[in-house]
Length: 254
Image (cartoon, rainbow, N blue to C red; front, top):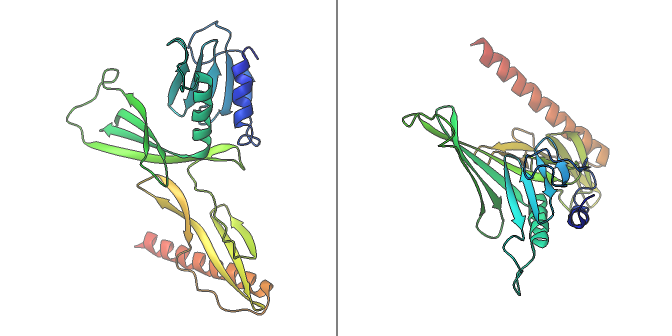
């Protein structure tokens, strides 16, 4: 590596990216400060997330945007954090917060986009964005529309996804994987067993998948063994899916 700051940033994000395919090179691919001996680090290649370290500057990339951190302003004043620390904090925010990306269109042409950090306990933080009005031919009379997608870093997979992480009920004695969009939880009380079924649902407003109680599933009974509860849960899912498939077939025929 060319720069000490690269090692500092890699150390700071290491707890989050242990399952990521992190790539480190000494060759810039972004066109900023060419031939200036940078370190280029890729965290999530598919989603264009990573950072580039120069002598006095760090650029953090995410999806279609980026942020600059530098010390070109001169000496750091008392109480101010240096540019490496600010870049470190921003990277950790990227890896721990939900990130909402909103694209605005006129007709089929995108004319602007913005990013926000989403917090549970305070207002969303505007990260800025891009306006394409001067670089694209846009019909001012075209119909306006917006598209939204919300991303979150999945530490277990080492990539950004628009699927909320599972929240396993601490009272469940076991969680059973059914498929990527569904799981069953088993409960026990006084040596009797029951189940719940959870599946993904798409939120159009935020543009993300979240977990909720499965729809059209026969409610759990009370069973004298865990095995019976598991069997009945899987049977309920199977019967629900059969019903949905039949309704889809009828809808196609009409």
